[in-house]
Structures are given as C-alpha cells and as structure tokens.
Image (cartoon, rainbow, N blue to C red; front, side, top):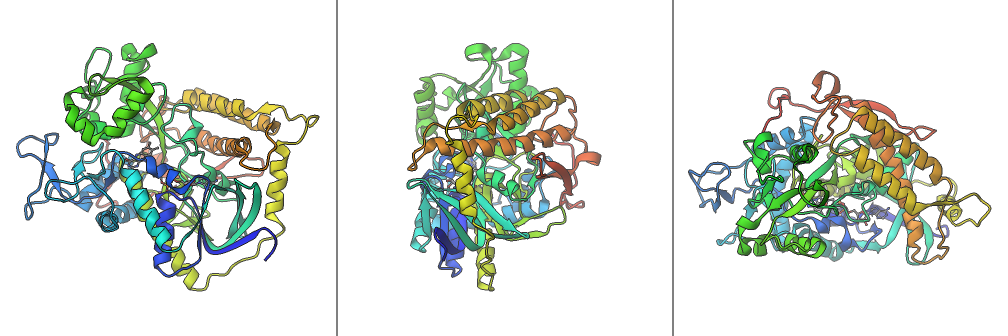
Length: 600
Ligand SMILES: Cc1cc2nc3c(=O)[nH]c(=O)nc-3n(C[C@H](O)[C@H](O)[C@H](O)COP(=O)(O)OP(=O)(O)OC[C@H]3O[C@@H](n4cnc5c(N)ncnc54)[C@H](O)[C@@H]3O)c2cc1C
C-alpha cells in the first residue's frame, strides 16, 4: 500500500440518513469492510435537524367523521376502513412534483415507506404515539391524508440516532471530521476519493470497490436558508468536476416558514398541527391562492403566495418583508408536546413566545430537488441514456433519482434518504460480493490536492488578495435576490454575471491561517469553491428553462409548458467550466398518471 493510502471494500461519504442506511444495509448483507467519511461528527449531519416527520401511509389516524378533510384527527379503530394507501401517496407526490418526478422511482419510494417506518420502530426509534400505542401521525402540505410519522418536532434526531447505533453495531468504521476533497473517476469507473483528516491536516487517497455519496443538500448558497453551515453541496460539486452530469439543478425549494431575517426553520408541522398564516391585515390570505388546502398547500405555492402578499405591501415584521405565523389558538399544551423545539427557536432567536403571539416568518432556501442523477439502485448515471458510472452511487439529498421532480412534499425527504440509502447499500453489497475489482488510480491524486490547497496560503506577491468570506457573501446575496422564489431573465442574467465574476476572483483568493490542524479557513475556501461551481449550474439551468414548474417560477414565463419542458435538465461540465445543458425524458405512466393542471 502506498503511503497515505487507505482501502475499503465500500466507502461512503456522508453520515446522514442516506449514508448511514447504506452502510448498515451493506453491513447486514455481509460486507465487513465499510468506511464512512463525514466532515462533521456523524450525529451532527443535517438529517438530525429535521423536525416535522417522515411520510408513510400507515392508516393510524383519520379526520373525525363529518368534519371534512381539515377536521380534527382521531385514531382509526382496528378493522375499520383505511383512509390512506400507497397509491394516494404516489399521486400526491407526482402532483406535488408538478409531473417532473420519475413515476417508477416514486412507486418504489411510497411502497417501501411503511416497511421502513416499522424497521425504525423495531430498532427502537422513539416515535410519538397514539393512546393505544400505534405511531402518531399528523398532516403535512400537499398530502391528502395524515401520513407524517413523527417524534414531536425532533424526528430527524431520533431517526439518525437510531440508525447510527445500528451501523456501529455492524462494525462500520466512521471517519468523523474527515473532508472529501475530490472524487476519482477514470474511464467511467469510480476508483475512490481524496480526503483530508481535518484534525491532523493529512491528505489521503482512499480507494474502494464501490463509493457512495450521501453528502446532503446545498442551501448554503443562499443568504436566507434553513440549512446548517455544512450544507455546501460538496458532493454535487465534486461529482460535476469529475465529469458526472447534474440533474434538475434549477429546482430549489423555498420553505414558507423560515424565521424572519434568520431563515431558521419553523417546521411545517406548525401548519400541520393547525397554524395559520396571516398578512398585515390579519387575513388568512391562503384563501385566495389555495382555497382547498389553505396553509397546507405544497411549499412552492405557499412561498409564492407569501412573497406576493409581501410585494403588494401586506407584509409583516420589521421592514414588512415577513408574514405572520399564528399558532396562538393551538394552546400551550399542544405547542409544548408537539412543537417544543419550534417554540424554543422562536424564543431564542427573536424573543417571541409562539404560545402568546404570532411570529414573523419568510420563505427560506431549504431543499435541493436536483443533484447527482441516480437510478433507484443508487447507481449514478453518466448520461441521458442512463449508462451507469461503474462503482459510483449516490442517495439522499445530493442525489436526484428523481422522486421529488420540481417540488418536494414535506416528509418525503427523510423517506427518500432512508429508502434509497438502504437500496444503495444493498446494491453495493451485491456488487462487491459479485467480485467488483479494486481499480488502480493514475498518478498521485492526494499530492495534486495538496498542491491545490497550498495555493490558498501561498505568500504575498502572488496576487492572491481576495477574501473568501467576502466572495461567499456576495454569492449568497445575489442568489437570494436573483435566483429565489420569483425569477426572470434579467435577474438570472445578473446572477450569472455575478457568479462568473466571483469565479474569476476566486482564483485570487487567499486565507491567512496557515496552520495544519483544524484549519477552518481552509475548509471555508474549499466550500466556497464548491458553492460557486454548482451555483453556476443552478443559474444557467434556470435561465434556460423558459417555463414555470414547481419551485422554478419565471415571472416572464408564468405557465408550465409540457410540450417543450416536460423533461429533466442534465448539465455536463465543460473544459472552461461552463455547463453544457442536455435533457432527459421523464418516466411517466401515461395511462395512470398523465400530467394534469396542478390545482389545490
Ligand atoms: C431544518 C431542516 C428540517 C427538515 N425537516 C424535514 C422533515 O421534517 N422531514 C423531511 O422529510 N425532511 C426534512 N428536511 C430535509 C431532510 O432533513 C434532508 O433532506 C435529509 O435529512 C438529507 O439527508 P442526507 O443523508 O442526504 O444528508 P445529510 O443528513 O445532510 O448528511 C450529509 C452528510 O454528508 C457529509 N458531508 C458533506 N460534504 C462532505 C465532504 N466534503 N466530506 C465529508 N463529508 C461530507 C456531512 O458531514 C453529513 O454527514 C429538513 C431539512 C432541514 C434543513
């Protein structure tokens, strides 16, 4: 073994739900040598911040008879008519996706859902319960039945802890605070990654028979975001640099209820439990936009409605750029048992007690529907024909399988990461057990990374004068202003020229901290590079798509245009860094689920 080289049968980057499920599933299937890299302590992965719930049609509750679809919920007595089914979950997801989701993948997602919830339950996950002991369920936006399974508003936390324990039990080796710097693909075969041990500052080439990315989302390209600081889309940028295309990057979800001025999430469970949205006149304005579902319309629609109210002068909060989330009628007991974390966040960050007073919120960058294109087996595809990249897998938020299409429904993402993380683990185990080779790498990739990083600290006289923090802030500012809830040609062109000029300036970026151990300035530099790389793809994909679909809303093209645009975007990297855009058909069952107008 060469110096600074580490070898595993399976190497997974990311210890959120997707990566950990994959490790556990591969371990259970008999692969003994599994490494999992995480730039954070595994339990600090963003999955652990998820609040509201994980979807599955379990049929534990229904609206009280005669109270209509929005009435109070009661347990369904055993043996009585179910209100929910995988078919209903599937239809809601397809409609939520604005028909851009691949229907074969969605079918797998919703059919696997109940089983994966029971698997969590059998592993000891502490779900909230009904009085008879069954798992409690609540409503969520765009779902026509109450199918969000939850643990108060700490759902991601309990799921991640449950599965992390199981992975440890199966002997998975975690590399906490190791940072993946590069992905090595040669001749369409994935051979490994280059990684930095953050604590010691050493760089390693890590080789494996199968590599998986479960590196999460990229909300940190926006100024107002619900995402943790680590959500910088590293995996997406690294895959793109290594020649893998990126799919549907223009579709970024803005969650309707980010804490005003901060972006921190006030879970959709607030509305699932019955919360109202009010404008400055005190009106529940959703009546105008989605009279059927009101506050529980899908996120893209609610965020646009809020933004419209704000832009017509009916905003609340300081500067009237917010909307009021009113939970006061829910009462103290419900808030303290179902939404304790949300209450704490509003108190801590805005000094507002949601039991007593409405809290101002605003749309916040939340979830990336696009990402690394993958099959339901987790295998990453290299082109529109679906050719797999040998030995490379992706699952969770960094992947685009695509089950969320143009807009994700709340609670479908924890499900996506769990279901497809597990499937990727099973497929990788088969692949390895069937004799997958450990391919060699050319040259010394670790040395190349070392040289690249050394440039950030090269001494004066090199013309490196740009500050990383400044570049990152300018990017976030322009993405929020010009590539947000509402987009048009002019704003997107502005965003593009800003991103291009920031990429030029980045070549002259430098950092002051030259220390080897735990150099957070260096990490910020690498992350900013990644933010710029994928932001460019987002903006160019958004510029090209001259229609409005799901979360991608063009005020200059306000209609969905199926004849021209019912297709996925595939962006390939080119020699000069500009994306070359191609397209790929959507998998649709034209008999069962043909595209319809999307009304709520
Ligand atoms: C505040 C909040 C609340 C949410 N609530 C819900 C909800 O209630 N229901 C729902 O369905 N969804 C929810 N979501 C979305 C959902 O939590 C995520 O989409 C999902 O958890 C993503 O899981 P993941 O495993 O793909 O990635 P993550 O959990 O984000 O994990 C990413 C992993 O990749 C690692 N990583 C990244 N880059 C590198 C690198 N360069 N080197 C090494 N390691 C790296 C990180 O360390 C981390 O371990 C919420 C999201 C947020 C932000």
